[in-house]
Each structure stands twice: as C-alpha cells, then as structure tokens.
Amino acid sequence: MAKTNIYLFANWKMYLGMAESEKLSKDLVKFSKKLPKKIKMAVFPSALSSTAVVKNLKKTPIAVGAQNIYFEDKGGFTGEVSAAMYKDIGSKYALVGHSERRHLFHETNHEIRMKMEGALSIGLMPVLCVGETAQESAYEPVWAISKGLGVQEQGKHCDATEANRVHGFIKKTVLALTKDLEPIILFGGSVRPNTAAEYLKQSNIDGILVGAASTHLDSWKDIVHNAC
Image (cartoon, rainbow, N blue to C red; front, side):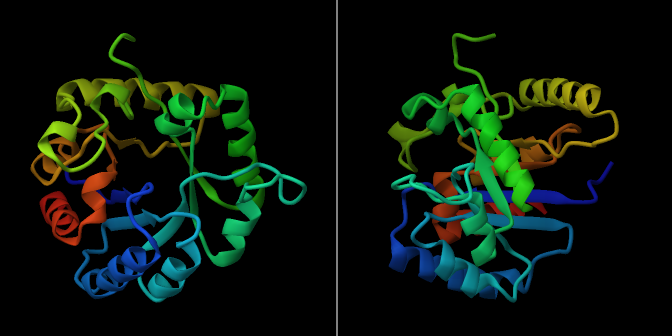
C-alpha cells in the first residue's frame, strides 16, 4: 500500500558552517519546486545558521527544525537556546533526545522529558529520538549511526525487516499510552541513497532521519529520488 506522506528529515549536525548552510538551503529552494506533495521535508541546521536557513526556505514547503533545545523560555542559562527562541525565528520542529545528546552529553530521560514538554508548550513539534546500542536487545539504532560519508566512517547496516519490527513495537507502545494519537515513526541510522527505498517500503516506517548524507546536495537528491 502506497504511503500518503513520506517524511524526509535532514539533520545537518555540526557538519556545515554558515556559508555552507546558506548555500545548501538556497540550492534546496530550486530543488523544492520539483518535490511531490507527499514528500514532507525538514532540515535541521546548526543554531547559528537557523535564522538564515529559515529565511531562505520561507517560501518553500521545506520546514526547518532545531537540533537541540532548552526547556526554559528565558533566564540565566549561558549557552542554551530555548524552544521559544527557535519558534520565534520560524522553526517548526525540534529534535529531542538524539543519541548523540544522550551518549556524548549524557542527557537523562528526565531532561529529555523536560525538553519534550518545553517544545510542546511553545508549539514546536518534537521529534523524539529513541534507540538501542549493539549490546541492547529501532527508531535510531545507535550502532548503525555513522560519523561521516567515508566508507570507514559508515555505521553498520540495520536490516530493514528488523527496523520495521521495532517500529511496529514503538507504534503500539505510543498508541497504548496516548489512545488516539497516531505516531509518525522515522528511521535513522546511516541512511544512504542506496538504502533509503528499502526502509521506506516497510509498513511501519513513515520516513527517515538522515545525517551526513543530507549535507551534500547530490546524495540528498538521490535519497529523495529513491524515496519517491
């Protein structure tokens, strides 16, 4: 059964500087004119580049999101950027609890819950990331995440059938907790142009969250083409 909507989210992480982010977002403006309506795209630039990217993509169907947020609106929190600030510049989404935030910066489930509540209270759509390590027996299998585009940097490939099974479990869990909220579940874990279609064919996978491969126009175009 064909999907009504396909969600393609691009997490630029800390790969692109200001000039690179501006150039890629401007290139996406041209590209967006050819996007099928079923493609729901969002990009997640760095905090410093977010305002410029929002401005460049304002008249396109491509949304912009925050890579990370702080749950308080204002206050003496040096170095933090609040959900309210991202909403104010025109962001629509916010990544919450990405595995790199959990494992590198030791974010706890309590902090992640606070960020979820902060995003929802201000009107940002949270993209909650959950995953597993290789030792734990996925939305975002941590063992499958790469550190870049090079062959030596790519994570291990997660079997699409296994990913679909875990996505089905996540959907059932969310439905049991919310009763009537139909969740949108994306897969993230070293998605490449040659694997995107494989994941999107699965019944429980509504879209993909792409890291390094989304920061290069050619590879991102290939992913979008294969997703269609």
